[in-house]
Length: 185
Image 1 (cartoon, rainbow, N blue to C red):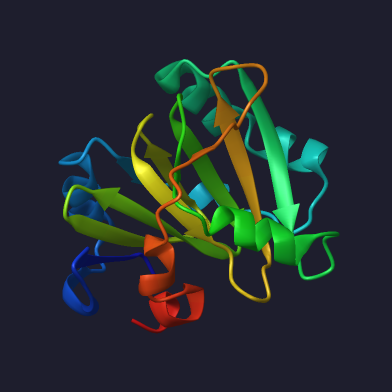
Image 2 (tube, helix red, strand yellow):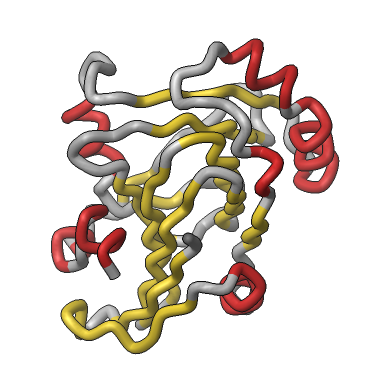
């Protein structure tokens, strides 16, 4: 089930409100320049399916998103507890960062939590299979894949060299609920 929880940066223990309806989530995020779409036909394969199978099954939605966002390259990432270096990967993703390009992800299987910092507000989005997010360039954010990650996502890039994070050095991520806490909200 889709989930967007809103917090004040100054009070991470108090959730101001939570939305569960995809249209309401999309509208709330759009007000901050974030695109969110529910694409249930895109949750068609199991986590860890071969990249070629995912690209073939989702050729239409991938082409549509590339055209919409001006993306030049696409890849597929699958992460499980057996992924080499998964603990270090999670730690890196948990650090607040920005990008010089939009960060667009289509979750194909599993789930993860995006944390979006907008001035004095933190938006916590549980992204599940069949959902797409596009975080605008320059927006402070981080991602939690959980202690036992199991997800597959299509990643969209405007630059051929792909995802490059610029870390802010702010320890804010440690103040907010992790994936388990977010999923329980």
